[in-house]
Length: 161
Image (cartoon, rainbow, N blue to C red; front, side, top):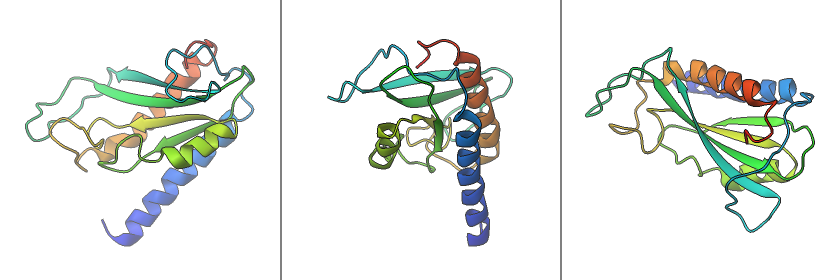
């Protein structure tokens, strides 16, 4: 992809994340909840990982990986303490980058009261079956849409994250 195309894609991702913030910042149902796994000494933060399965779309073949009839999308949530409504930051890390790579930056958002949702796409994550690849990038916008739909559906259940 040419440099101009990469910049455009980066702007789209940033714009999408900012749009998600605008959409969710006033959502009364998004609230912190009982958190199953605390991975930081600070009692006001928990890290929760969900795997959402989209059975309407396939995961393509990738090297030694035969593919799958559905898409399993891991989402790592950084959840601030409290029970107030939360603004949401949806983060989409780069290809082959570990899901925890941007924690120093993202913890600043969480410390400011944001529910941070970090998407780990099936074939561009660092531990992708068959190795990280760009061949599945065209599926990522639908992954993001699916994750947002799952988050909205779960927003009334305070134990969701």
